[in-house]
Length: 262
Image (tube, rainbow, N blue to C red; front, top):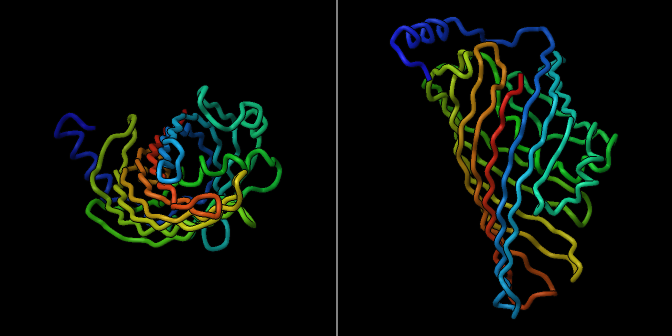
């Protein structure tokens, strides 16, 4: 944050001259994605116990943006993934995800499409959920006070293991700030979502449904570079199927922090 009026004035003058379009040069950036997740499953109505899973992961990625007709292509390469001792994904799978690639597309307004694995690393698909939301709506020319909304639908998985999240998000360019010696605009985001899908379990197929909410913020430089951010998500879900007499409630709390790596 700026600490004096001179710095604030300098930011204000710079924002008046923000470009409305991206620069044409390719952009390569590296990010660290730190996530923590707590899942509480209450199966007491079915004669079982409450179960809690809690773990954290750190993922390093390289993102390359290139001009394309109608926007920019985005290539995401996994440099490394590490989890703590409680992470349910085996360390061998995390290690083999290194080098895995995902593709997305930024439309002319800077809105990214869902990440799609290229198929170069089957293990990368298993950790796709760790990266789905790490890159937000980013473009040059945000003006402080500007607000907008968006509805997105994202489906992950395939066949009998598919989950669809429909999300409505309210954005606002909240403030001008200094982010690690770089001029930036702080964007706040608040969302509500619905979740529906299916997941195979050892006891048979399960139906997943519920709702979620979340909030956070991120930073965008005057030339449209993503500088990182933080957000939290809470979901209230139910799991049902022939294996359970009563639907099983599940509460998921997830926090994410993205840091630009120099």
